[in-house]
Length: 550
Image 1 (cartoon, rainbow, N blue to C red):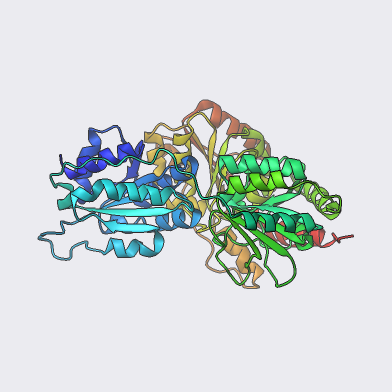
Image 2: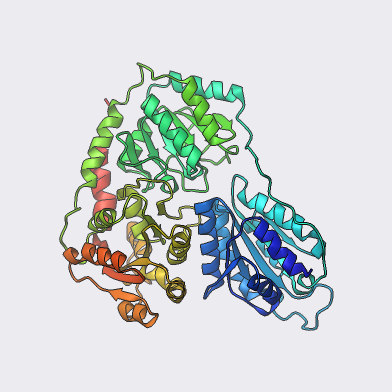
């Protein structure tokens, strides 16, 4: 058979259901092989969006999403998505075309060393030089992409190799593979540190966002009653309506949750690594940090844990739960004070009627509209901090935000992939006007795919987060403003529905109608970011600073 046919059959054996991408001259053999296969080709308007969709597919399923591009500019357009998946630990395979490697007649036209380019952005990158190696190369690519810590991998299929005549057997995925268990001595050391602590606290990061790990952590918290907080990418691992939830480390410092962290003498750090911005800085001799993760800690000047328990997270937490009992000397009184003050502060501004709308009112209205299993996909902007801090996630992977690469432009493609993975759930993309316009062309793709999707577009006519940072650094505002199209007309020109609420009271009913009607709906909403400094800086810092340990 033709090598491209074998390639597609190997993808089918891995369980690939769809591939996101853009066709080009050098991948036409692959496209033709897909035409007669069970795999759906989802044609996007830009390769970057295809990569974001593939990464989100991997994030939600645990199975590598697949993105396809041609050589040269098609491959370079995947670079941001590769970094997005690699830093965010999302399993993804990128397949790029290339000119014939044995003989071609176009000189250096469009030639870029894509394999070399992908080295710092992936777990593995290889050019396929023989059709006979395809089954092994694909099996190894999926193994590496999906193995903890997940990430991006890349395969380059040259045009002439794709046309080779081959007859090699498919290598099937391993039926059962269990991650290594943690060392018993390390578990004993961790358990002893927790027992002897006076103010232990549990920190949950992105690596714990797995079903078994979430169940194990719920059992751990329910048995031991140790308070917990999450990083941005750990939101929802445990229901944030849980009475022991202390909040989310959405701000870098100075928030209520940081008062609790500063008081803790032992931090049980589950599933976090320094790729995501650290919510605390370690200082020698101040506290004990227990690192529980699939891999050992990447040591940084702000993170050098004294105890490492390396192995399957769920199994580690299960063994710790069995080995530990609540201790009479554990003192959570100050944590309780922090929690009560934080929850009081969360409720402020939730019924604010101003227009443009207060960010807290927006978050509260969205939380009301979204069911517990509804999925929010956030682009990157000031609103990400508001949602990370104020939106209570009830289930894992129901608020997808990127606090690793923190790339703009991912919100809409991510929501499209989420809706494809979970067509029965409500899915909302939340984008700023800056981030939305970076991949706004995918509105056509969403309409063509007949997705039921709501896009909340928060408009402030500028790069709001950078404007906030610029002011915080004492600089005059400069270079932050831009113009915008008529977003309602823009949506309707693409075959979507456009809405523009004029009062705070119109916002929530508009969202409800959009979900009820189905199809693609864009809701343009003016947001009042003038409160960023008052609420995220001055007000929260002053309120939390009043809290003092007993």
